[in-house]
Amino acid sequence: MIDVLNRFIAKVFRDLFKKKRHLKLGLYGPPNSGKTTLANRITEDWLGEKMGSVSNIAHETREIVIKEQIHIKSGRKELSFSLVDTPGIATKIDYEDFVKSGLSVKNAKKRAKEATRGVIDAIKWLDDMDVVVVVLDATLDPYSQVNITIIGNLQARDIPVLIVANKIDLKKSDVKKVQAAFPQYDVVGISAKFGTSIDKFYEALFALVG
Image (cartoon, rainbow, N blue to C red; front, side, top):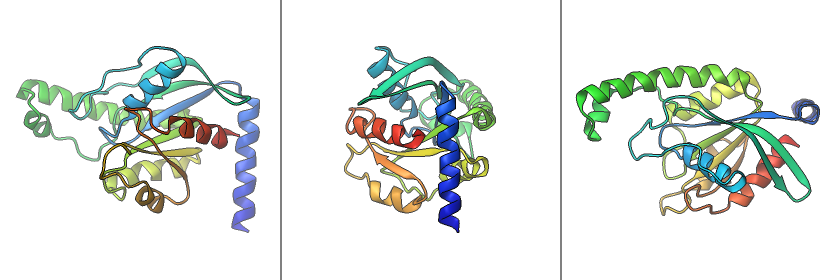
C-alpha cells in the first residue's frame, strides 16, 4: 500500500513538472558543504560565469542569491530553472567562531547577525521551491542535527529532493554513509570543486524531475 502511494505521489510530481516549464531549484545544506561551489560549477557549465564567492570561513553566503534562466541538457532532455543558492543552515551561530577564524569582534558579530537572518530566509524560501538539492560534505558525519533538520523540513513540505555527497576528492569522503543516512532519497557523489562526476549529478537531476 505504501509503495502504491509513493508511486502515485511520484506521478503527481512528474505531471506537475511536465506542465510547469520553468522550475525553482534550491541549493540547501550546512555551512561549507559546497553549495556555492556547486552553484558556480552549474553556472560556469551552462552560462560561462560564476554565481558567487566562496570562502573557508563559514557563512560566506548570507543572503539568497538567484540566477535566472539556466537551461541544461542531458541527451535529448532539456531542463530550465532558476537556481537559488541559499545561506548555510545552522542550528547554532556564535560570533566567537568567526573570531577564531580571524575576523575582528565587530565583523564577527556582524557576520553572525547576517548569517542568522540568512538561515531564517532560507527556511522561508523552501515554500517557493519546486526542487531542492541538498549538498552535504561527504567527509563529515551525515547524522548531524543540522542535516536532520534540513531533511525534516523538506519531508514536511513534500518537496522532491536530490542529495549531493560533495567533496569525494577527499580521502575521508564516504558516499555510502550518506546513502545509509538518507535511504529515502537518491544520493550522488561528486566533487563540485573539480567537477568529478558532475555528469552523474545532471543525470540524477533529470531523473528526479522526470
